[in-house]
Image (tube, rainbow, N blue to C red):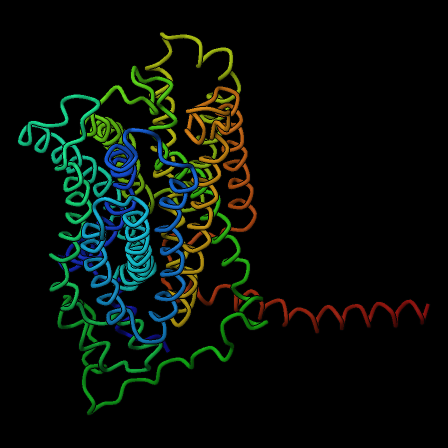
Length: 542
């Protein structure tokens, strides 16, 4: 017998609490994006303050990018698991506290003279920050999927994830504002050779501001009740699940018999007898976990490579090359942040909201295939003629930038958003957060491969002063575009052959679909054996 409170959630009309949940959960993703993507201009400032304008050693630079991503992957695994064991709400608050404390810790990185001490301290706090960010991924997706109705569930989860785009934009805007304010107020740094002492405060302030959005949502996050699906299906407490939902939402169906102890509600369905990674789990959900993890890995190779290293990719088209010391500390960071803001406003954010609008009309699988396809087309169009066309014709600068911006549009109106949505819809309630965390951790490993691999692949290892500086070498850039195009093509095949559509069905229908398929196959086996036996008997008689 279906549980009324869950059926009522699936059929509930859109109401204020849905939007409140989007804002509260989305601010976590906002903070995630702010903290992960502000590091590019911050590292540009650090290179002026502690490296005297020279490019940071490739090993140090790649480590600074990878450390937060590694922490994020770890947090997704650990807190995703705890979300299924302890409860979504409790772990959700802990992740927020970690993000706030570690964001301030990044700004208060010890030492102001020894660069090795500063970089080690910054790396430590960014790893801790990554733990909180990682935990927020599976919990935000799971909580939103379990609160939403089945008709608009995809749009709600996509709206939560779209806050990342706003976080990237605000990160760039804050960086530009801080740079302008310090440059005008301090009166220093106007000469390229001079790095004012205030610049060491500026980058720390940028990092600490990232804690404010998370801190502002802590109170509202703590007021959120546990999701009804976790309470009813994992804790087996239908009465409490119904009471919690009646307290925060207007449910049209009559669930009064589930909110009172006088008339006991029907017992919840027995939880699955199998455990995570058991043979039965792998038979029922192994394909889904494989598809979600591999697709997330592939898209993050592309997305993080293109986003975190945007300044290097575009430095060939800039009047000031990325390794130049012909600009002061504030202008250098401002230029990187300005480029990120343009991409976010023109490509990233529109892509997110196209997904919000179309996700429950077109479907997850079609959007994911479409996104991978057009990203592959852009990379191949950019890469194949790169050595003899894009890199040599000055008049093609604007065309190349528009073309490259389409990567971010179709990444977000495509696999970058759908890979966040699908794992929150496919798996049983008691494994949902864990499996989302596993999928997301695979994605962050892809991000590490992409960013670190790109930095080392484009490192100029010649002798002399230019050693360890990153350059967009023409042949290497062409190879990078072609490789990224191939990664997108691989994503098309994995999505087409392994990813299941989840649109328009309840979470419980998605969960039990594979079980029904397996049961149908097992029921057909005796019939097939019977037919084969009858056929053999007939042949022997003849």
